[in-house]
Image (tube, rainbow, N blue to C red):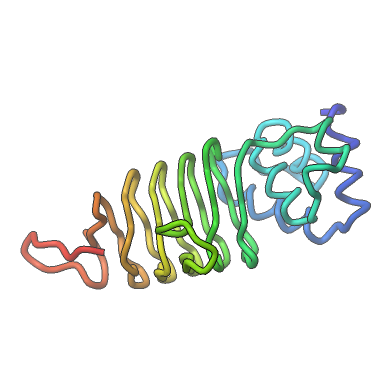
Length: 191
């Protein structure tokens, strides 16, 4: 725990509000003991979840050339999202690429997820992700689409069309399997 105290102090010097908010959000989602106080929770998260350190670097605007990043390495991920709401939790972020136009509050993203453009090019549109969205392992969300509030993207799904709020999609190509837009009687609508 002492090893991560300097990193904790570094973040605290750059603004306590961000760190307290992120610690609280992560501890609500992850199956960890209810740590008392920001220090204990932050140290536990930093020591066990390199994705947490990555998100803090993103939130604080710490670029890759900052010497602190040489000492405290974060998970190898990529995030080029101009607006990411509070409460983002990245679980097992290995191989995750988040390149959306906007991401809402309280979203969860698992390992191997790709969110980005459908084709290469500067002017290609990127997805807009709503609030309380869960994107499960190895899913791909591509193109200028919208993922509605409270939607769930199933593992290994390839989503190329917009998903309505509250829907659950799965498959390749992704189809609505539950919630708004799902057909009754076994048929499924493509998303």
